[in-house]
Length: 504
Image (tube, rainbow, N blue to C red):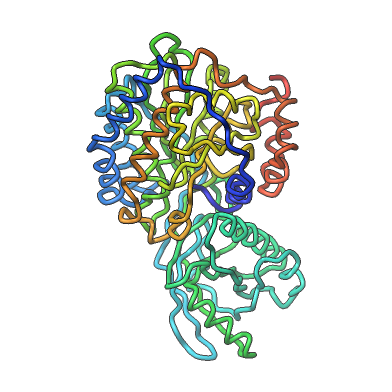
């Protein structure tokens, strides 16, 4: 799942996890849908491919940073995996990420009042430090509270600012972390700081990587994440009145535009192939771990759903189109590019379903502010209502690949899941295969596959496509307008370059 200003997504996703709407009372499952649902669950329960695909993606391909050879391998592998799964058609579509980025040989050290090495990693999509690095005094930059760095004034110019943090335990904590980071970075730029360092919100030396911009371009200044224990040691020195000097060397490798590819596969509908249900997950990941919870598990879920729908030999009424998006972690770039390239086809999309939160129990789906699609979703979930995925939410938020479809008025659903195990490993070196509970993944795949089949097999579409005026009301009612303004996305909406134009 994408972070950073992007991650105020979380500030919204925090909404998706907090005040959930009351449980939906599912209507009885139609008899005609019972047999396919049973066959779907049976097929998934005995499948060897779910674990096999996840192991290949995580252990053999590994971390999948956009623009790297490992991401290219992942795209080629996923294309072949969809073909092996029996999809009716598979292809890739290219788009452009404005700039390339890879971490260099990051080196961070305190040089006064004593000398010691500091464990840390560069933030993503930030510029390199000047040749030879930055040597400067470290100042306490507070926790990102609005106005704190502004009050430092001239003292902060050409200094390295160290940002405090609390430990994170929930998605709300992650959202608050990113909000505070964004505020701190904006103020640090305005006062002329040389660099910003963030203290890890997770103990025991755990490091992770986020971006602070959501358009695929480099951020305004060098930033890095420090191991919590080292960051707190530096803070204690500052609090003791010591002048702390640091050498910060981030020789990041940056370049011009790069090509990325989305992977697209279809199970064609038997009666209404021109009507489409899109099922999405992002294929890219950060590179410190192997991207299993975020988002390899859900890549495996999509592949297994496609294989199962092909195996039961009874396609649904509508076409199910599976899309593995690239560039999600840099700001939903792959899904944004897909929507813009297919704007003239959006009327044919009945719904978009996205999975992007690990393998925890699905408690329901976020409906993106759409009360009108609640009953249709309840019908689609009826075959698996006993699994408890009925506490749906009406919040709308930025943080995953449903966003640009939502702005175009298409009904969107994003899985809301238990994130107890997801949060500690989020974007970190700990996001590896051993963190995935295969029983949970198999169960979530069954729940999702049945719902997707039923959604594609309903006599009616899930909901209409909203027009510009209806979307403006939705943005205001869900506070998505505030989120977009904070993330510097509002101008695109106002200009009609992102989202449904006023004439449609």
